[in-house]
Image 1 (cartoon, rainbow, N blue to C red):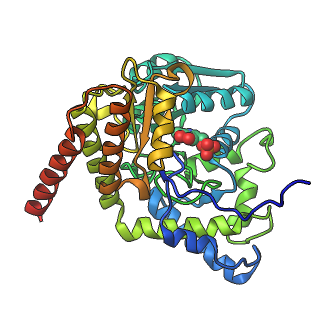
Image 2: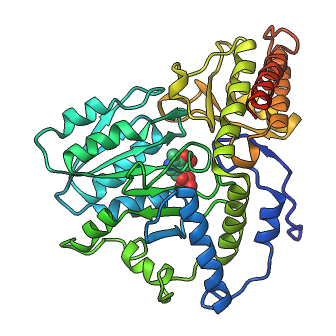
Amino acid sequence: MTEPIGELNPPVRLMLTPGPSSVDPRVYRALATPLVGHMDPWFRGCMDETQVLLRQIFQTENRITLPLSASGSGGIEASVVNVLEEGDEAIVAVNGVFSERMYEIATRASSKVTKVEAPYGKPVDPEDVRRAGKGKKIKMVGLAQGETSTGVLTKIDGVRKVAEELGALLVADTVASLAAVPLDVDRERVDVCFSGSQKAISAPPGMSPITVSAAAEDVFRKRKTKVQSWYFDLTTAMNYWGKDRLYHHTPPISLIFALREAMRLVMEEGLEARWERHRVNQLALIDGLEAMGLKLLVEKPADRLPTVTAVMVPAGADDVKLRNQLLDEFNIEIAGGFGAIKGKIWRVGLMGYCSQKPNVLLFLAALEKCLIDQGFRVASGAGVGAAVQHYTHAETAAAASR
Ligand SMILES: Cc1ncc(COP(=O)(O)O)c(C=O)c1O
């Protein structure tokens, strides 16, 4: 006889991972509110509000702005397959696993996709994109603003200028950066921009906010072939998210409730305050890590993604054992590296609800204990001390500028 399955009772973790992030209790409450039908007139109002919030966070007036019923990878897929048809030329700037995923998806839509690479830990040089596109009729240039696998921030402006010169649409993956890093879709003229619900927005995983410029909509209208994915055809998806609210598919209603609440909290805090919070918490974390003698993968401070800090695993440390100890002893989850840098880095996420001073200080203290248990000599309290000092300076400077 098998035992009856018990009630679901997951452990309460502090998710300092590159996503998903922990969620505000108010978002859990929204998730647990009673269901309504997806064609219910009340729900239509809720959809309107969700779209208002999405436009505020993306900073756009774009008509096509909706949360796709998909994880972040669905956002990549939707963006690429709506823009590209077989034979179209495209360039994808690749500097890690997720930008590589965009390249891989693009190669399934067209056989003429060029990869322009940068070493792990660096953004792609816009000059390399310019060179790759010279003399070609490029339809799309793609990039990841936040490359989560390496903790690298790519500045959109440089690549966008090149995309404009080439007459190409710019597609940006902001899965790990939206609501944590400055982004203004309309001002920066990003044509297709998508994100994920589970990172700095701090809603549960499963939705991919996306927005499409009028120029990209025009390109969609002029396609010669149908989008090969029925589900991700953005023009038909807009029949539901547009004014007619025509049935397309049954959306994850509870996830929309949670996303709406999470985005309401983003706007309650204010975008600029949120960007600053992410910036300060990462700088305090970095000061703490460096005071403990640890090194970062991303050498140039300006290239560091505020939501994900890639720390080099020190020689002699057992990567998996340390991460397991953090989980078992402190209930803290961080991530390892993958792809070419598996076992070489730890990735510490400070995203959305998780990007908080108490979490930074707890993590640094817990890391010190784990390193000491592996035989490393760490000056007692050095990490926490340096982070505290950072916060004290930052708070004094903020008070003086008020
Ligand atoms: C930058 C980036 N793009 C895309 C994805 C894929 O998102 P998902 O795992 O939600 O499909 C991730 C996930 O970590 C990501 O960090």
